[in-house]
Image (cartoon, rainbow, N blue to C red; front, side, top):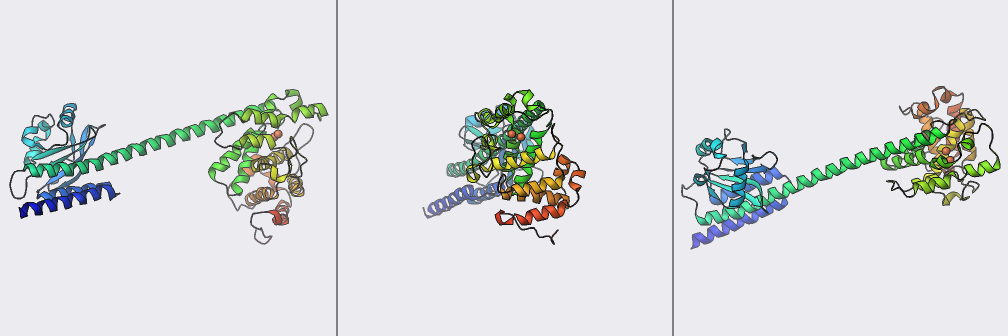
Length: 422
Ligand SMILES: [Fe+2]
Ligand SMILES: [Fe+2]
Protein backbone atom coordinates (compact mmCIF):
# COMPACT_ATOMS: atom_id res chain seq x y z
CA UNK A 1 0.00 0.00 0.00
CA UNK A 2 2.78 2.39 1.06
CA UNK A 3 4.69 1.49 -2.11
CA UNK A 4 1.63 2.22 -4.24
CA UNK A 5 1.14 5.53 -2.47
CA UNK A 6 4.78 6.46 -3.13
CA UNK A 7 4.36 5.52 -6.77
CA UNK A 8 1.23 7.64 -7.05
CA UNK A 9 2.91 10.66 -5.45
CA UNK A 10 5.89 10.24 -7.76
CA UNK A 11 3.70 9.91 -10.81
CA UNK A 12 1.59 12.95 -9.96
CA UNK A 13 4.77 14.90 -9.35
CA UNK A 14 6.07 13.90 -12.79
CA UNK A 15 2.74 14.78 -14.39
CA UNK A 16 2.68 18.19 -12.72
CA UNK A 17 6.23 18.84 -13.88
CA UNK A 18 5.34 17.75 -17.40
CA UNK A 19 2.34 20.08 -17.45
CA UNK A 20 4.60 22.89 -16.31
CA UNK A 21 7.16 22.04 -19.02
CA UNK A 22 4.54 22.06 -21.76
CA UNK A 23 3.05 25.40 -20.69
CA UNK A 24 6.27 27.23 -19.79
CA UNK A 25 9.07 26.26 -22.13
CA UNK A 26 9.61 28.57 -25.03
CA UNK A 27 12.25 26.27 -26.40
CA UNK A 28 10.19 23.56 -28.04
CA UNK A 29 13.03 21.07 -28.52
CA UNK A 30 14.04 21.39 -24.90
CA UNK A 31 10.45 20.95 -23.76
CA UNK A 32 10.19 17.69 -25.69
CA UNK A 33 13.57 16.47 -24.44
CA UNK A 34 12.68 17.20 -20.81
CA UNK A 35 9.24 15.62 -21.25
CA UNK A 36 10.79 12.42 -22.62
CA UNK A 37 13.24 12.25 -19.73
CA UNK A 38 10.42 12.76 -17.23
CA UNK A 39 8.36 10.01 -18.84
CA UNK A 40 11.26 7.54 -18.98
CA UNK A 41 12.45 8.47 -15.50
CA UNK A 42 9.08 8.24 -13.76
CA UNK A 43 8.44 4.68 -15.01
CA UNK A 44 12.03 3.45 -15.14
CA UNK A 45 12.10 2.94 -18.89
CA UNK A 46 15.48 2.24 -20.47
CA UNK A 47 15.10 4.04 -23.78
CA UNK A 48 12.65 5.86 -25.92
CA UNK A 49 11.97 8.66 -28.34
CA UNK A 50 9.42 11.30 -29.30
CA UNK A 51 8.71 11.88 -33.00
CA UNK A 52 6.65 14.65 -34.57
CA UNK A 53 4.43 13.75 -37.51
CA UNK A 54 4.60 15.83 -40.63
CA UNK A 55 1.32 15.61 -42.52
CA UNK A 56 2.92 17.06 -45.64
CA UNK A 57 5.95 14.80 -45.70
CA UNK A 58 4.04 11.79 -44.25
CA UNK A 59 6.93 11.11 -41.94
CA UNK A 60 7.78 10.88 -38.28
CA UNK A 61 10.76 13.06 -37.39
CA UNK A 62 12.54 12.29 -34.16
CA UNK A 63 12.51 15.31 -31.83
CA UNK A 64 14.16 13.65 -28.83
CA UNK A 65 15.73 10.25 -28.26
CA UNK A 66 17.35 8.56 -25.32
CA UNK A 67 19.27 5.30 -25.52
CA UNK A 68 18.19 4.48 -29.08
CA UNK A 69 21.71 4.98 -30.44
CA UNK A 70 22.98 6.80 -33.49
CA UNK A 71 21.91 4.10 -35.93
CA UNK A 72 18.20 4.44 -35.18
CA UNK A 73 16.50 6.25 -38.11
CA UNK A 74 15.80 9.94 -37.40
CA UNK A 75 12.94 9.97 -39.85
CA UNK A 76 10.33 7.24 -40.44
CA UNK A 77 8.10 7.34 -43.48
CA UNK A 78 4.46 6.45 -42.96
CA UNK A 79 1.88 5.60 -45.56
CA UNK A 80 -1.79 6.44 -45.56
CA UNK A 81 -2.71 3.12 -43.94
CA UNK A 82 -0.26 3.66 -41.04
CA UNK A 83 -1.75 7.06 -40.34
CA UNK A 84 -5.30 5.69 -40.56
CA UNK A 85 -4.53 2.89 -38.10
CA UNK A 86 -2.89 5.25 -35.65
CA UNK A 87 -5.90 7.57 -35.81
CA UNK A 88 -8.29 4.67 -35.18
CA UNK A 89 -6.15 3.50 -32.29
CA UNK A 90 -6.03 6.95 -30.65
CA UNK A 91 -3.87 7.84 -27.70
CA UNK A 92 -3.42 4.30 -26.39
CA UNK A 93 -0.09 2.42 -26.16
CA UNK A 94 0.30 -0.31 -28.82
CA UNK A 95 2.49 -3.38 -28.27
CA UNK A 96 5.13 -3.47 -30.99
CA UNK A 97 4.32 -7.16 -31.52
CA UNK A 98 0.77 -6.13 -32.49
CA UNK A 99 1.93 -3.19 -34.60
CA UNK A 100 3.94 -5.39 -36.91
CA UNK A 101 1.02 -5.63 -39.31
CA UNK A 102 1.40 -1.94 -40.09
CA UNK A 103 3.05 -1.24 -43.47
CA UNK A 104 5.85 0.93 -42.06
CA UNK A 105 7.08 -1.99 -39.94
CA UNK A 106 8.11 -3.78 -43.08
CA UNK A 107 10.79 -1.12 -43.48
CA UNK A 108 11.77 -0.44 -39.87
CA UNK A 109 11.16 -3.81 -38.22
CA UNK A 110 14.88 -4.50 -37.69
CA UNK A 111 15.56 -1.11 -36.12
CA UNK A 112 12.69 -1.61 -33.66
CA UNK A 113 13.89 -5.12 -32.86
CA UNK A 114 17.50 -4.07 -32.40
CA UNK A 115 16.56 -1.37 -29.91
CA UNK A 116 13.98 -3.51 -28.17
CA UNK A 117 11.20 -1.00 -28.67
CA UNK A 118 8.15 -2.44 -26.89
CA UNK A 119 5.46 0.22 -27.05
CA UNK A 120 4.26 2.77 -29.59
CA UNK A 121 1.99 5.58 -28.46
CA UNK A 122 0.29 7.50 -31.28
CA UNK A 123 -0.13 11.12 -30.20
CA UNK A 124 -3.65 11.71 -31.44
CA UNK A 125 -4.87 15.13 -30.34
CA UNK A 126 -8.26 16.42 -31.49
CA UNK A 127 -8.50 13.68 -34.11
CA UNK A 128 -5.15 14.58 -35.57
CA UNK A 129 -1.95 12.55 -35.48
CA UNK A 130 0.75 14.93 -34.25
CA UNK A 131 3.45 12.39 -33.38
CA UNK A 132 4.39 9.03 -31.89
CA UNK A 133 6.24 8.05 -28.70
CA UNK A 134 8.48 4.97 -28.84
CA UNK A 135 9.28 3.21 -25.59
CA UNK A 136 11.84 0.46 -24.90
CA UNK A 137 11.81 -2.11 -22.10
CA UNK A 138 11.60 -1.26 -18.43
CA UNK A 139 14.80 -1.28 -16.38
CA UNK A 140 13.43 -3.93 -14.02
CA UNK A 141 12.64 -6.20 -16.94
CA UNK A 142 8.95 -6.39 -16.01
CA UNK A 143 6.24 -6.01 -18.63
CA UNK A 144 4.22 -2.78 -18.73
CA UNK A 145 1.32 -2.93 -16.28
CA UNK A 146 -2.07 -1.38 -16.96
CA UNK A 147 -1.12 1.23 -14.35
CA UNK A 148 2.03 2.05 -16.36
CA UNK A 149 -0.05 2.33 -19.49
CA UNK A 150 -2.45 4.79 -17.83
CA UNK A 151 0.48 6.95 -16.75
CA UNK A 152 2.02 6.75 -20.23
CA UNK A 153 -1.32 7.76 -21.70
CA UNK A 154 -1.65 10.80 -19.40
CA UNK A 155 1.91 11.92 -20.08
CA UNK A 156 1.62 11.29 -23.79
CA UNK A 157 -1.45 13.54 -23.84
CA UNK A 158 0.63 16.38 -22.33
CA UNK A 159 3.40 15.88 -24.87
CA UNK A 160 0.90 15.62 -27.72
CA UNK A 161 -0.78 18.86 -26.66
CA UNK A 162 2.67 20.51 -26.59
CA UNK A 163 3.37 19.38 -30.16
CA UNK A 164 -0.17 20.34 -31.24
CA UNK A 165 0.32 23.83 -29.83
CA UNK A 166 3.63 24.16 -31.62
CA UNK A 167 1.99 23.08 -34.90
CA UNK A 168 -0.72 25.66 -34.36
CA UNK A 169 1.84 28.38 -33.71
CA UNK A 170 3.80 27.38 -36.81
CA UNK A 171 0.60 27.51 -38.86
CA UNK A 172 -0.27 30.94 -37.46
CA UNK A 173 3.23 32.20 -38.22
CA UNK A 174 2.97 30.80 -41.74
CA UNK A 175 -0.35 32.57 -42.29
CA UNK A 176 0.94 35.80 -40.78
CA UNK A 177 3.92 35.61 -43.14
CA UNK A 178 1.58 34.93 -46.06
CA UNK A 179 -0.56 37.92 -45.06
CA UNK A 180 2.54 40.07 -44.79
CA UNK A 181 3.57 39.02 -48.28
CA UNK A 182 0.07 39.69 -49.63
CA UNK A 183 0.09 43.10 -47.96
CA UNK A 184 3.49 43.89 -49.49
CA UNK A 185 2.22 42.81 -52.91
CA UNK A 186 -0.83 44.98 -52.45
CA UNK A 187 1.32 47.94 -51.40
CA UNK A 188 3.50 47.47 -54.46
CA UNK A 189 0.42 47.30 -56.68
CA UNK A 190 -0.93 50.45 -55.03
CA UNK A 191 2.38 52.26 -55.54
CA UNK A 192 2.60 51.16 -59.17
CA UNK A 193 -0.99 52.30 -59.75
CA UNK A 194 -0.24 55.65 -58.15
CA UNK A 195 2.83 56.09 -60.34
CA UNK A 196 0.84 55.14 -63.43
CA UNK A 197 -1.72 57.77 -62.44
CA UNK A 198 0.98 60.36 -61.92
CA UNK A 199 2.31 59.64 -65.40
CA UNK A 200 -1.22 59.92 -66.82
CA UNK A 201 -1.68 63.30 -65.10
CA UNK A 202 1.67 64.53 -66.40
CA UNK A 203 0.92 63.36 -69.95
CA UNK A 204 -1.88 65.88 -70.16
CA UNK A 205 0.52 68.74 -69.56
CA UNK A 206 3.15 68.73 -72.29
CA UNK A 207 5.12 71.61 -70.72
CA UNK A 208 5.50 70.19 -67.25
CA UNK A 209 6.36 66.63 -68.06
CA UNK A 210 7.14 64.59 -64.97
CA UNK A 211 5.80 67.30 -62.63
CA UNK A 212 3.71 64.98 -60.40
CA UNK A 213 6.48 62.44 -60.08
CA UNK A 214 8.96 65.16 -59.10
CA UNK A 215 6.54 66.67 -56.57
CA UNK A 216 6.18 63.18 -55.09
CA UNK A 217 9.95 62.89 -54.82
CA UNK A 218 10.46 66.36 -53.32
CA UNK A 219 7.69 65.65 -50.79
CA UNK A 220 9.49 62.43 -49.93
CA UNK A 221 12.76 64.34 -49.37
CA UNK A 222 11.07 66.78 -46.98
CA UNK A 223 9.37 64.02 -44.96
CA UNK A 224 12.61 62.05 -44.74
CA UNK A 225 14.47 65.13 -43.52
CA UNK A 226 11.78 65.61 -40.87
CA UNK A 227 12.62 62.10 -39.65
CA UNK A 228 9.25 60.61 -40.49
CA UNK A 229 8.70 56.86 -40.55
CA UNK A 230 9.00 54.84 -43.77
CA UNK A 231 5.23 54.53 -44.00
CA UNK A 232 4.67 58.25 -43.48
CA UNK A 233 7.29 59.06 -46.12
CA UNK A 234 5.53 56.70 -48.51
CA UNK A 235 2.22 58.41 -47.74
CA UNK A 236 3.55 61.87 -48.43
CA UNK A 237 5.13 60.70 -51.69
CA UNK A 238 1.76 59.30 -52.80
CA UNK A 239 0.13 62.64 -51.90
CA UNK A 240 2.73 64.36 -54.11
CA UNK A 241 2.19 61.97 -57.00
CA UNK A 242 -1.55 62.54 -56.94
CA UNK A 243 -1.83 66.20 -55.91
CA UNK A 244 -2.82 67.40 -59.42
CA UNK A 245 -5.15 64.50 -60.27
CA UNK A 246 -7.99 67.05 -60.59
CA UNK A 247 -6.23 68.43 -63.69
CA UNK A 248 -7.41 65.35 -65.57
CA UNK A 249 -10.82 67.07 -65.87
CA UNK A 250 -9.46 70.49 -66.88
CA UNK A 251 -9.49 71.46 -70.55
CA UNK A 252 -6.22 70.42 -72.17
CA UNK A 253 -5.96 73.81 -73.98
CA UNK A 254 -5.99 75.66 -70.67
CA UNK A 255 -3.31 73.44 -69.19
CA UNK A 256 -1.15 73.62 -72.30
CA UNK A 257 -1.66 77.31 -73.05
CA UNK A 258 1.64 78.83 -74.18
CA UNK A 259 0.55 82.29 -73.01
CA UNK A 260 -0.77 83.46 -69.67
CA UNK A 261 -4.35 82.26 -69.27
CA UNK A 262 -7.21 84.70 -68.72
CA UNK A 263 -9.29 85.05 -65.54
CA UNK A 264 -12.02 82.65 -66.71
CA UNK A 265 -9.51 80.01 -67.68
CA UNK A 266 -7.67 80.58 -64.45
CA UNK A 267 -10.89 80.01 -62.48
CA UNK A 268 -11.40 76.80 -64.41
CA UNK A 269 -7.84 75.65 -63.66
CA UNK A 270 -8.19 76.56 -60.00
CA UNK A 271 -10.96 74.03 -59.61
CA UNK A 272 -8.45 71.20 -59.84
CA UNK A 273 -7.69 70.91 -56.08
CA UNK A 274 -11.37 70.48 -55.18
CA UNK A 275 -11.94 68.09 -58.09
CA UNK A 276 -8.86 66.13 -57.10
CA UNK A 277 -10.25 65.80 -53.60
CA UNK A 278 -13.55 64.45 -54.96
CA UNK A 279 -11.69 61.93 -57.12
CA UNK A 280 -9.45 60.70 -54.32
CA UNK A 281 -11.94 60.70 -51.46
CA UNK A 282 -13.81 57.45 -52.29
CA UNK A 283 -10.55 55.49 -52.64
CA UNK A 284 -9.41 53.59 -49.57
CA UNK A 285 -5.85 54.94 -49.32
CA UNK A 286 -3.50 53.35 -46.83
CA UNK A 287 -2.66 56.98 -46.01
CA UNK A 288 -5.70 58.98 -45.05
CA UNK A 289 -4.43 62.49 -45.81
CA UNK A 290 -3.91 61.97 -49.54
CA UNK A 291 -7.24 63.59 -50.59
CA UNK A 292 -6.60 66.54 -48.23
CA UNK A 293 -3.18 67.11 -49.77
CA UNK A 294 -4.83 67.36 -53.20
CA UNK A 295 -7.48 69.75 -51.92
CA UNK A 296 -5.21 72.15 -50.05
CA UNK A 297 -1.90 72.13 -51.89
CA UNK A 298 -2.52 75.68 -53.18
CA UNK A 299 -3.36 77.16 -49.77
CA UNK A 300 -0.87 79.58 -48.18
CA UNK A 301 -0.01 80.20 -44.55
CA UNK A 302 -1.06 83.86 -44.88
CA UNK A 303 -4.55 82.87 -46.06
CA UNK A 304 -4.06 84.13 -49.63
CA UNK A 305 -4.24 80.72 -51.25
CA UNK A 306 -7.13 78.76 -52.71
CA UNK A 307 -9.69 77.13 -52.75
CA UNK A 308 -10.68 77.97 -49.13
CA UNK A 309 -8.20 80.69 -48.14
CA UNK A 310 -7.19 78.67 -45.10
CA UNK A 311 -4.57 79.99 -42.71
CA UNK A 312 -1.53 78.32 -41.20
CA UNK A 313 -3.03 76.01 -38.56
CA UNK A 314 -6.08 75.23 -40.67
CA UNK A 315 -3.99 73.74 -43.47
CA UNK A 316 -3.32 69.99 -43.18
CA UNK A 317 0.39 69.40 -42.64
CA UNK A 318 0.72 67.05 -45.60
CA UNK A 319 -0.75 69.77 -47.87
CA UNK A 320 1.94 72.19 -46.65
CA UNK A 321 4.63 69.71 -47.67
CA UNK A 322 3.12 69.13 -51.11
CA UNK A 323 2.66 72.89 -51.53
CA UNK A 324 6.37 73.52 -50.99
CA UNK A 325 7.36 70.63 -53.27
CA UNK A 326 4.90 71.81 -55.93
CA UNK A 327 6.11 75.42 -55.86
CA UNK A 328 9.75 74.36 -55.90
CA UNK A 329 9.15 72.27 -59.01
CA UNK A 330 7.26 75.13 -60.66
CA UNK A 331 10.23 77.46 -60.04
CA UNK A 332 12.87 74.98 -61.16
CA UNK A 333 11.36 73.76 -64.44
CA UNK A 334 10.87 75.56 -67.71
CA UNK A 335 7.32 76.73 -68.41
CA UNK A 336 5.98 77.87 -71.78
CA UNK A 337 6.02 81.50 -70.74
CA UNK A 338 9.10 81.52 -68.52
CA UNK A 339 12.42 79.73 -68.09
CA UNK A 340 13.31 78.05 -64.85
CA UNK A 341 14.87 80.33 -62.26
CA UNK A 342 18.47 79.97 -61.09
CA UNK A 343 19.03 78.03 -57.87
CA UNK A 344 20.15 81.15 -55.96
CA UNK A 345 16.95 82.94 -56.76
CA UNK A 346 14.84 79.94 -55.83
CA UNK A 347 16.48 79.62 -52.40
CA UNK A 348 15.97 83.32 -51.81
CA UNK A 349 12.34 82.96 -52.83
CA UNK A 350 11.83 80.09 -50.40
CA UNK A 351 13.40 82.14 -47.62
CA UNK A 352 11.39 85.23 -48.45
CA UNK A 353 8.13 83.32 -48.54
CA UNK A 354 8.82 81.26 -45.48
CA UNK A 355 6.03 81.98 -43.01
CA UNK A 356 3.90 83.58 -45.75
CA UNK A 357 3.40 80.88 -48.34
CA UNK A 358 5.46 78.03 -46.86
CA UNK A 359 5.78 76.54 -43.40
CA UNK A 360 9.20 77.69 -42.10
CA UNK A 361 10.20 74.32 -40.65
CA UNK A 362 9.52 72.71 -44.02
CA UNK A 363 11.66 75.25 -45.86
CA UNK A 364 14.37 74.56 -43.29
CA UNK A 365 14.08 70.80 -43.82
CA UNK A 366 14.14 71.20 -47.59
CA UNK A 367 17.15 73.57 -47.59
CA UNK A 368 18.91 71.35 -45.08
CA UNK A 369 18.43 68.25 -47.28
CA UNK A 370 19.69 70.19 -50.30
CA UNK A 371 22.74 71.50 -48.43
CA UNK A 372 23.63 68.02 -47.19
CA UNK A 373 23.58 66.76 -50.75
CA UNK A 374 25.61 69.64 -52.18
CA UNK A 375 28.24 69.39 -49.43
CA UNK A 376 28.19 65.58 -49.77
CA UNK A 377 27.29 65.09 -46.15
CA UNK A 378 24.97 62.51 -47.65
CA UNK A 379 25.80 60.24 -50.56
CA UNK A 380 22.29 60.53 -51.94
CA UNK A 381 21.80 62.28 -55.24
CA UNK A 382 18.09 62.96 -55.14
CA UNK A 383 18.25 66.66 -56.00
CA UNK A 384 20.94 66.10 -58.62
CA UNK A 385 18.82 63.51 -60.38
CA UNK A 386 15.80 65.79 -60.45
CA UNK A 387 17.52 69.06 -61.25
CA UNK A 388 20.73 68.16 -63.04
CA UNK A 389 24.23 68.42 -61.54
CA UNK A 390 25.14 71.85 -62.91
CA UNK A 391 22.01 73.46 -61.56
CA UNK A 392 23.09 72.85 -57.97
CA UNK A 393 26.58 74.11 -58.63
CA UNK A 394 25.38 77.68 -58.85
CA UNK A 395 27.81 80.16 -57.37
CA UNK A 396 27.21 81.03 -53.76
CA UNK A 397 24.49 78.44 -53.25
CA UNK A 398 26.10 76.93 -50.14
CA UNK A 399 26.41 80.17 -48.11
CA UNK A 400 22.95 81.10 -49.29
CA UNK A 401 21.50 77.85 -48.01
CA UNK A 402 23.38 78.16 -44.72
CA UNK A 403 22.16 81.69 -44.37
CA UNK A 404 18.62 80.62 -45.13
CA UNK A 405 18.83 77.87 -42.52
CA UNK A 406 20.21 80.11 -39.80
CA UNK A 407 17.83 82.89 -40.63
CA UNK A 408 14.84 80.63 -40.13
CA UNK A 409 15.82 78.93 -36.94
CA UNK A 410 13.45 80.88 -34.78
CA UNK A 411 10.53 79.04 -36.25
CA UNK A 412 12.26 75.82 -37.08
CA UNK A 413 12.14 72.62 -35.10
CA UNK A 414 15.36 71.42 -36.71
CA UNK A 415 18.90 71.79 -35.44
CA UNK A 416 20.79 75.01 -36.00
CA UNK A 417 23.32 74.76 -38.79
CA UNK A 418 26.43 76.73 -38.01
CA UNK A 419 28.41 78.37 -40.80
CA UNK A 420 31.57 76.80 -39.35
CA UNK A 421 30.09 73.37 -39.18
CA UNK A 422 30.07 72.69 -42.87
FE1 LIG B 1 -1.92 72.03 -58.41
FE1 LIG C 1 1.18 70.78 -59.18
